[in-house]
Image 1 (cartoon, one colour):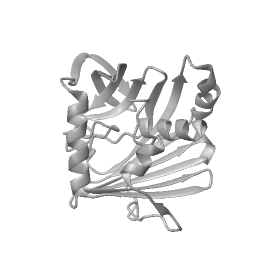
Image 2 (cartoon, rainbow, N blue to C red):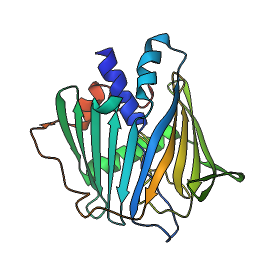
Image 3 (cartoon, rainbow, N blue to C red):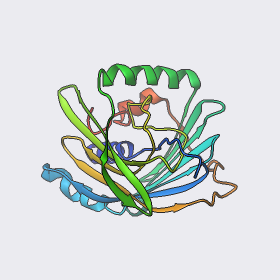
Length: 237
């Protein structure tokens, strides 16, 4: 059960979709790869090492967005669909023989956004446009968030580009987060673990069927039920 929950936590804390301002790329695909993981917990070390190479692919246009995540060599596959016209989201999870589906209504999403504001408190995004790096030909600058929740400190550092416009910024438990660009690198220091994702491919091509939902027998669960499984956590907070 501990291993199962840890895998879910890793999936959620890795689940990021992004926002930007530029009109240069408002439809396409960004593929991120987990290039580094670290922990001071020996019990988690082996599992985290096995997570390296995990990917998440963000498909997007101005109305819809899908995040397709693959971890542990395919042992976990998660697909998250967001429809911005209807303000709803659906998630499909395939993990170790379990198939789970969740649907969030606009009311549920609004409640979650309010809860995220309360959790973050006065924490805001700090930008440093002098701290830059180039990733796949895009000039990026630094954005950072620091917070403390339930006594645990967390720091997230992004390198973002305003040249890519992905509709929504989403980090678990921070639904209202907005950034001045799309992150092409994400460094997360979550206390018990650290993770670095970086863009490895960017394309203007968007498959016409990218928003087609998976078929099969998925057990539908509520957000509350997922939280009881550890799904609503991010790095333990």
